[in-house]
Image (cartoon, rainbow, N blue to C red; front, side, top):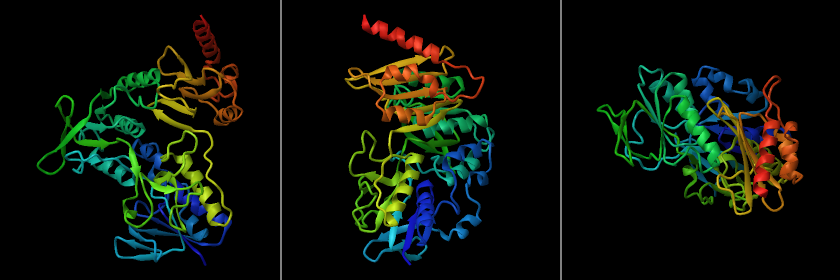
Length: 434
């Protein structure tokens, strides 16, 4: 019986295992060094904040794996021998495979900062990071102050987590405004204010120079590059992005660049070896998408796609229109299509913000054809399927604005803003036509 081995039990690897089982009776082994069972990584913050237990993050009961004849192995793969199709584990174990799926996800970036490996310095990505956080920041008596380095989505999640336990936070962001490489100026500025309104010490244009240790080898303080200021703290969160977790395959013959290079069928340069999820890098561009995407839903889709190929029904990876969602403290964020921080020569933005400074939208469109390109929404819930359809139908921006109420799915009795948005849009168009 053909043996399919999957390294990584995150959303990509587990989805691949589930769909291979649906399509075949192949032998399946799922390997992880992080946890015994699959869990929802995005829910880790809510465990720390007391909204759920770690067990609540596991979508499947423990009996699910045996019932579906999926073997689980806890272990760290040290290297891959592609010639003998053998995995070498750190404890000396060996395992052979017929087909191999690499689904090892991401790891937090480190840039060689002095002190980056001290006790009390961590990322916020793995289950072990949550355990470290509980150890070093159980409350504001043990942790008098935390410093977060890096202004992305993981950074603001960690700030919210620590804030929930009344731990003072200094947030170092090297850019001039929070996440301004992704968010247009008006949105980024609004989020700056929202972070500070939650009593977070947001330090823009501030980079980490070094982390200093106390006499026990634990973090004592950080030094800011631009000013030389020393901030005393008990915990440092490194959240300056993530990168594919692929060190263990270096030198194996599997082609890598930033991630594991794959074609549209998620095949590597080595026969019978595939890569999916955060660690996969597309050889050829798929529209405007980045070659590596650390996004939950694309990992799931890759898992479904590779299962079909492995089971004899080759299927190209087709992620469709870009979308994503996140949360900035209590402001929900959604994006559909493309809204770049700095619009191109032929692109225009329409931006509307409510007076309470927590609700806004930005819509992107082509100046000449008026084709709708994408939308960012903050504080207004919008339906993914509606925008996906409008993007597929190449609707123009005027149609989208006129029919915005069709996309809204805020709960009953929530305030609706479509009339205000439409009025502001018409006002902008009149000004531009003068």
